[in-house]
Length: 105
Image 1 (tube, rainbow, N blue to C red):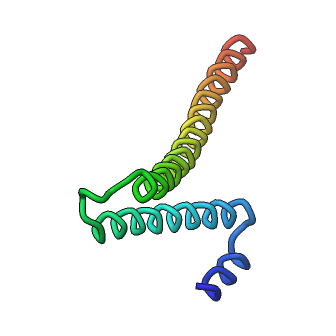
Image 2: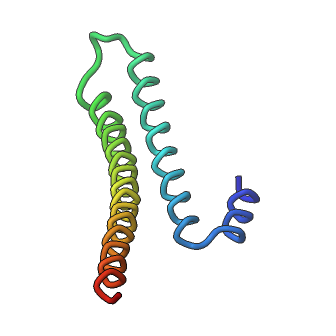
């Protein structure tokens, strides 16, 4: 994994590399917490489950899930907003340019 990350660090711009590292770390945390939760629940009898065995991995799963969800929603919102500004900026600029050409003639 280390050679791949060093290659990506050399080839990608720093914000993209930081995004990928953040995404990978949150995915790893989610998978690890989910594995711990399932392993802990599968290895014990359901009658012996208590808050000390169920709650910490469950909190870790939810926090990793919400971190990934927040990362996804923030990124998608940023891209949609950027495209909206580009689209409407082009439309308004074309209308202003056309009105200037019509009234200038």
